[in-house]
Amino acid sequence: MDLLIKNAAVFDGDGFTEEDIYIESGDVKKIGPSLKAEKGCRVLDAKGMIALPGLIDMHVHLREPGFEGKEDIESGSEAAVAGGFTQVCCMPNTDPVCDSAVGVSYIKYRQAEVGLCRINPIGAITKGQKGEALADIGKMAKAGAVAISDDGKSVMNSKMMRLAMEYASGFGLKCLCHCEDANLSDGGVVNEGYNSTLSGLKGQLRAVEDIMIAREIALSESLGIPTHICHVTTYSGVELIREAKRRGVPVTAETCPHYFTLTDDVTLDYNTNTKVNPPLREEKDRLAVIEGLKDGTIDCIVTDHAPHSVKDKEVEYDVAAFGFSGLETSFALSYTYLVKTGVITFKKLVELMSSNPAKILGLKGGSITCGNPGDITLVNVDERYTVDSSKFRSKGKNTPFDGWEVWGKIKATIVDGDIKYMDEGIES
Ligand code: DOR
Ligand code: ZN
Ligand code: ZN
Image (tube, rainbow, N blue to C red):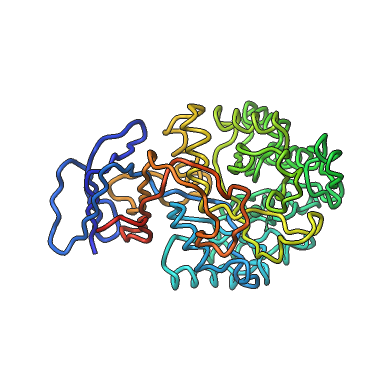
């Protein structure tokens, strides 16, 4: 069915104009004032709402197949559209690991069956993410993988990583690099510093992350092959990427809302909902991450949505699972702590959460333009609400943001012109 969105403040890349958007057969057909509803067309009144190009999260964990107790493709998709995401890319650390064409096809099949947001599979770099032999990269590319990653760990063997980058680039795919020197991290669960001394929890030096960021940059520079750095957290890592970009190295980078809103101070009460990998760092890191977002060193905001069950988190800090359920808090945290505070512009936020991820991975979407898919997120930035994890669509209630007051409510999420999510009180 066609869809007419009335009276939305349409973000056109620079500013807002109150306009209507007509979506026909899934694609944006017309944008303009006072468009008429054609027969049989659904109408959604978006007065007071901003229409953004559908948000894209290029780094999530959906857990299916194998860990459906934590999340599955259906619950993860519901969480995604509730969070305003029309498109996500899912990491391969499932059971079995997504390291073959069959694994990639399974995710695409399930996404079609669930039919909420677009789900782009990310294939593994190495078979079983064991770091020993390359996965079927070419076959995964042909089956529809949009990138490769051994996320959860680094590919420790640099020659293996070189081969992966060369091979993947032949198919137009990038490696998404989880940067962690596994020998140096050695079971660390928080940042190593003043607070780990106070808490007695085992720490991870910044160098754990920086060494691998430096290696990926070195490989990218020597080979002339683009690379992407996952979840940057350290001030020194931001500086490595900034310098590399200045030299013209084809590197891009992401960070997550928790790295620009929290520091390791929150780990001092041993709440396992503060345990994440890479760990929360110190204030100077948090400020450097924000600087990196401002000056373009960091290209996008991702959630690293890592849902876990209660039993994975209600244990001692040392043995609890790493990660936060992030899909349903990302937009509001980013809007509240970056835009509302005046740190970045709205335009920049749209780049970070939609157009840049689309560019980095060559995905459709990232702008509201005639002829492009009708992927649109409607938000009310003047609406304030309290984060309540018990209401998450995600099976993972593991968030450090429970009870936080935030601005920016997702009102509706539209994929291919179909309304996939509507907030309470919205009618069409
Ligand atoms: O906190 C994390 N959780 N970091 C990772 O690298 C993996 C992820 C997960 O899969 O739970
Ligand atoms: Zn990771
Ligand atoms: Zn991850």
